[in-house]
Length: 63
Image (cartoon, rainbow, N blue to C red; front, side, top):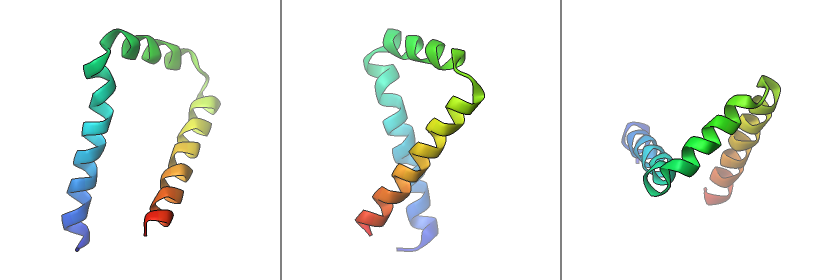
């Protein structure tokens, strides 16, 4: 498969996965966003880095 076939599928799956929590429990999602808004930038960056590293590790295991 070519990159331009896989990339849109991957982006679409991200939107589907990101939409599950607000769809199932909007009040919990709103509460979570309010909690994240209170965190400092360094904590949010560490969480983002951890998410990226986890994703890269998962891709490595899959491929």
